[in-house]
Length: 233
Image 1 (spheres, rainbow, N blue to C red):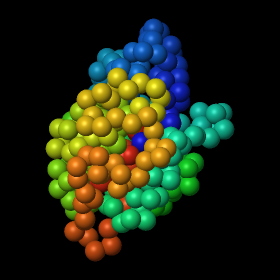
Image 2 (image 1 turned 60 degrees about the horizontal axis):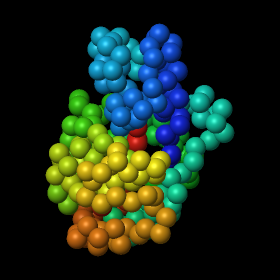
Image 3 (image 1 turned 45 degrees about the vertical axis):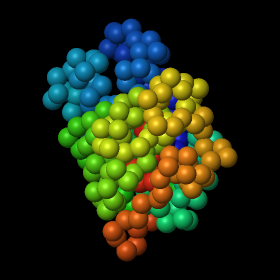
Image 4 (image 1 turned 90 degrees about the horizontal axis):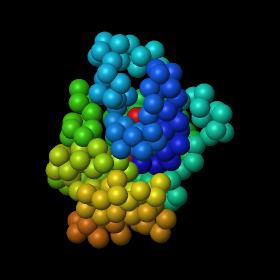
């Protein structure tokens, strides 16, 4: 979790609900929709048929370009970009694992100057089951060439923490929007990345950075598997 999309995601789902004649509160969005794939939210929370949900996703219902332009860009989670660059420089294999679309992930990375830096990116289309199922993190670990049990995941949602643990990874909960209760099940909870280092967090978790089988393994991301780290839908 590199970028703060709390307001963007919340406002988007509130607007979608209004357009469908539904009353949804901000708390319901946070508790039921954060960390989930758009297609799963449309089916499970709004009662759409899977075919209709898939059509809406395919036609860009969750595209955030316009919203980002109106908001004049995205803001990095404090310290996150520096933390990711430090992991990259140290050679820790990492992967972006997000419930967002590939396009929205690209927007986020570009906004904080990290576009093109991460080879392994798992977006919402790459797995049959999204968070809280372990599938996204299991796929990330496989593509990194490391065991899931050797990975550390950085998450800011309850479904993400559950997915990390289901995959066998340790999890650092990042309470970047002031809701540590949402990530209370994580192995370690931090407010944000300010003052944090990859080595320091690994030491607090009682582990060390995994090494990928691939010869040229680099840091490949955050809501990250590897050693952020979503993104949210």
